[in-house]
Figure (spheres, rainbow, N blue to C red):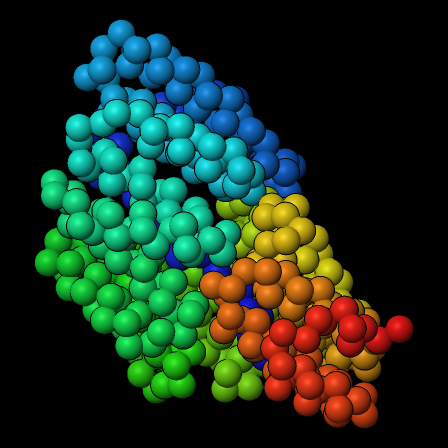
Length: 397
């Protein structure tokens, strides 16, 4: 069974504007040396990102000083802030990334394209955190705003389509993916087209049409493989989608290959501790547990939940999804009491966030199945019939 957390769809929303503005993150001699030192490979992404964060902070402060004396320099401020926010996000520090973007968004701005860039970056960050109710109006504002480029509209549509997918609003999601696909093709933006094809393919797959999903995913892979400048996280995203396709077809070895390749890319790009790394570890823990490799599966599932907790907090939906995934691993291993504890905690988190009711219902279905396996059919029936039953009252001591 696939884990419930959604892997973020990467879209470079700053590329268009950055081409017109300054380049704050010029490569330094120390970074070049670091990149070329194979002995530092395992720590390179974290150390390099720390250096770039320092550079981006310095650039942002210069941009703020310039903007205070010359409001026409707002573009420089936005580009510097977007770079810094992306670096924080890549480092797994979502609160700092959000803070930077909200500070810039609060500044007066008459340039619709600049405002759209910041809104989309913030909305995509919130979407990845599972805060769709906050992300949706920001994406919609970008779509409705006059003066916003087709690239920004496509980015906003991608975000909204993915939210619809997470909530199983299949028809609405597919419509938005198709509009985004048309925009990317009209603009001859093949990288965005590849990302849209990946999203559309995943939506068809999750809605029960693997036959329609597979050609879309394979075309997305080909397009990104032919793009020498494609971001690693974009390539990893479509590889993970192929892994989901193979897992649904119960082709465990092929699923493991795709997810392992994606994990290698994400680790090289983000380091060992990051939500996207965690999500792929959840996927692989599912494969390992399906093959009865329980020690490895439990290790991956536990580390993934720890990463999600560190990045998003103890009451976050990404953590709830990771706990539900670990519960399935424990259930397959025969550790039913441990599995029940994880399910209960996951459901309590989801229940406090009504906008995630579809995810909560999926967790409840799994937990009810566990209760039945433990010969507690009465409690399973009560859980399914009365969704307001306190989960704590069903705890297995």
